[in-house]
Length: 343
Image (cartoon, rainbow, N blue to C red; front, side, top):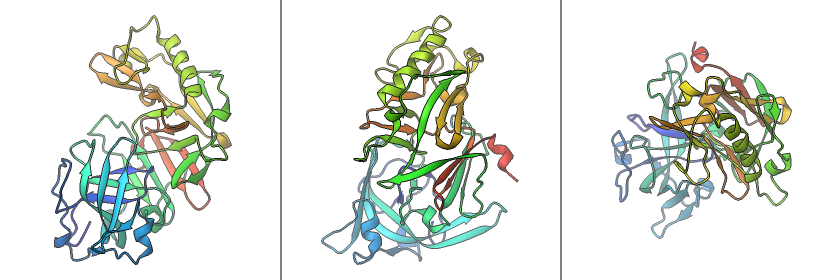
């Protein structure tokens, strides 16, 4: 980002639209691994005028008393960022080891940032559908492939923006509402058993409530009560007697057991999330459980408390190439080890 370019480590988030990083001067900044971005040292940094439409397309975009365009974003986990909207130049590596420059990209320069971060990232890369987002600038298509998110040495995770997007596998219809991506979840199976869940529970109502969001910015998956309880009960019944259950390790109502899931659950059947159009997310144990300590693991699916919204998080999406076609409104699921996508 910037001229000269300064590397940024950002969290990719399909659940939001703005690309922002922490900036000097900073009244509140969260710990990050690299230096703060200093816009005064970039010759391509241009503040956004209050007169420009981008100002009001930004999250809670407004004009302050000094004529600066200010944004304010709040995330579901409680994290907040407030700062100045600007245009900046981005430099990307291409798949053939070249580089490409994107000028005049809308960014947020965060001067007041609070909340949970991992101590490394400097901001968030919003991949939502709004015109201020990068997908809109790069051809309305992108794909990502995530391997083991618990392995910091896995070298094949990738994000592709634009014409190189890999659209393989089976597609399911995509819709957008309030600048968020929604899918149609039709059912859940454990092994050969289709769970008794009314698909209506996963539908968005005419009033706009409910529905199923796909979100790379969330680790876990969250299901409305009527979808969560049958899945929880079925998995509990399968594991009971083989592993001792422990309670409330992550949050109240979670499903946790003593042991190591990689070692103890080699026998466990696949779980399938069935989406409209015949697309399935097939969940192996790595997509379904998280090791929370050396001797305890939990199901990485929790009961949603988000106004009847269910959410498909990135743990569920591991070992898939997930492609978003924002022209034809489709999402593609291709189950693959990400290393095989590398030329």
